Image (cartoon, rainbow over all chains, first blue to last red; front, top):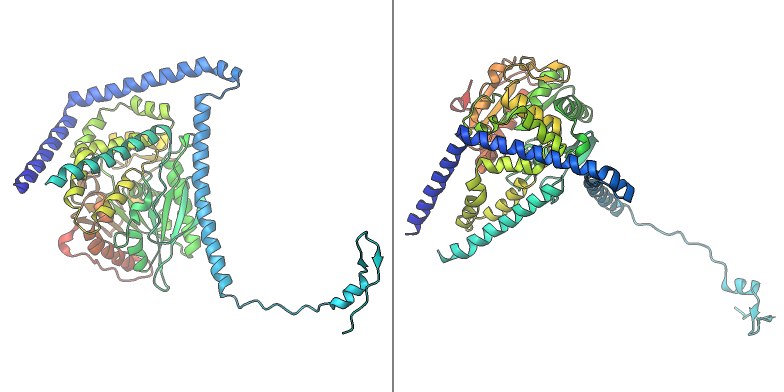
Length: 142
Length: 374
């Protein structure tokens, strides 16, 4: 039963596709589609021209950009965004490479820094009592 | 059977929502809405100029590796050539020892509507050939083109034959006099003024117009049958994943620059100027007899986008004495994604290229006699 249903469906797909192909080959159908497309485009051009003419002086006077300007800027932003994403991916790949190179580097060994003795430093800095009057602190014996 | 009524409508609704979203984005945004999926084969971008980025995929084998430039079509995104492990043309070639360079076309904006064949062929393609020469350290480059990319590659080879070592064309739209594909009868009815109007109204040929053309080629398949196929093959391993990625590619249409849209529609398709040797690119008329390098012309026997008859005449048009047709039993996209193509066709293409690089003195055909047509 299921097989029969699928066979029926496949036959319907073939039949419909063949019918559509026949329509494409029909000269009258082709001409009417081409004519419709042509007229639609001409109306679109006409309306674009009318709107741009009507808004050419009005929009700038109001400090507003025209649709064409906005569209052009939008396209440019999209283009820059795509390029930025690609560059960013490239940078991330380079960063990963740098991390790998750093990981391979021998461990950093800090040289011992000579430290001035605490007592010596304390001697140079007089202690202060509350009220900020300096007083001499007794130096503890080492 | 009951699952048919629950799952199939869900698949169809997913696709309908995706298509409507794509239509909305196509009407309002000039670029694909979604980013490309992560690549299967790692690459780096080594060049970017004009409207092209050049990707470099390093060979998986130790040197000496063979540089191969793949010229991708101007429509849709190039990730179809690197879709999935085991279904990646790039991966297959890289594993065979090729350093692969791939053109990643930057979608045109309204300000790029002036770009035609001259800009793309004598500008971008010639520049990437030069970049491959410098990067790989070779004087001549082997080039492979797919569909529209094969057209660009052929034009470049005819105009700059001294830079090309070998040429491989896949589903090349050369002789467009055939009307075996029914939709082309409809396109014949478009007057030159209408074609000019499309470019004038939108600047470029919009992405939704390109997508509508491909959908109209098989409306029942794109509207319903592919979702039924997904339901019927849901148990097949990897089918759903492949379907999702393939549909993503099908929705990745990009605009076509206004001038090249006019040139392709009028000059290539309607007047068949390239086949008749009267196509002008820049200041020169393209003469395919200037192609004297070895040529391998791959044709899909069941191609319903570029009919096989459109590609068959290439060997008799070129000046090369080593030009071979290979008819493979697959469709237009099957040459790059089908399992059979990856099992048989791409290893054979790799062997043909390896045997034909200029420092190899002996040329042997890797094709069995029954697959060759001359």
